[in-house]
Image 1 (spheres, rainbow, N blue to C red):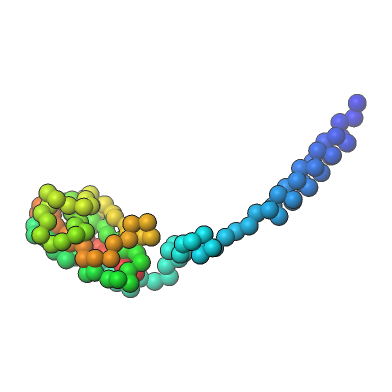
Image 2: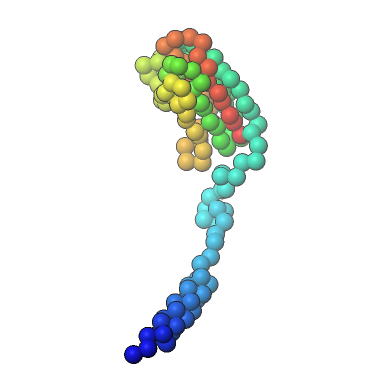
Length: 132
């Protein structure tokens, strides 16, 4: 029995099915889904290096227009970020940036617009801050 016609028929059916299913696919923009396209950032407004000390140091000033921020620990000691006020100590922190490259990203899922303070157990430890 020759199986070639059955194989060709099966291939033809699969091709027709894939073409008809691809016409059902529709790509939606983020605004159609109720969101904003935060993943498209073409430039950053602010880049800075901040030396964290044993007391709260302002790492990023409040900004009601902020859409993104990235903090990177560029030191050999953990740095702690506080997202509420300058009076909080290292013991009461919101985010720990581990030594040698620990990062914290603020994006559309966790955006904070207020002041961000940094502190560490050993003074003079640098963090890098990007903001858009």
